Length: 204
Image 1 (tube, rainbow, N blue to C red):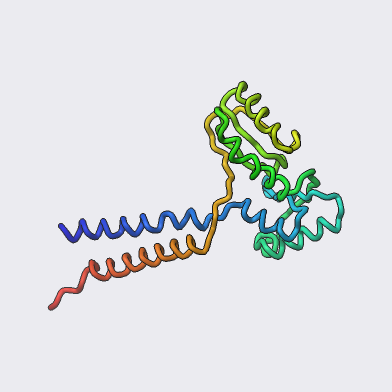
Image 2: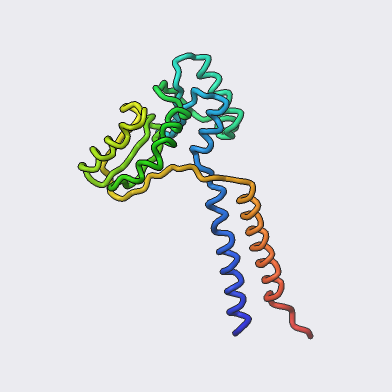
């Protein structure tokens, strides 16, 4: 009985150790966008509509479009290996510019009563801010006016407590080593636990 309880606890511990690792490896799409934009500054994000990928570029120059595509093919296996169907849409603001404004206002907007979420919406090429009621919209607009962010780069809408927060998660070497260590510990626990508790052939 004690062995059975110990065995259950051992595998439960292994699952708990593995669980946070899944979140770590789910890289934020906006982290990818920042990496792409570092090489192609006109890049403004991409998104799916059905099976079609819409690639936003803050330029009408065909040469810039081609450069953005080249960077996507170099950095994103999706574009390099899977030959997706895509269209290029011209937008007003690059992802770098939208993200820069978002970082400026992020801490301040969360001091305003009524905010329920925020993020960068690449489909709309805007910063999106959600608030609880219509009266909260004017309060948020008043705060944002203190920053030099164009009105057409921000959309404030009423939405109940739904946190559309795309604040990028940090992925440092320290965290990577931590999670890899957790994976290793879980594997060791499972391996030795299985060997210890595995049924042994009876002696004849």
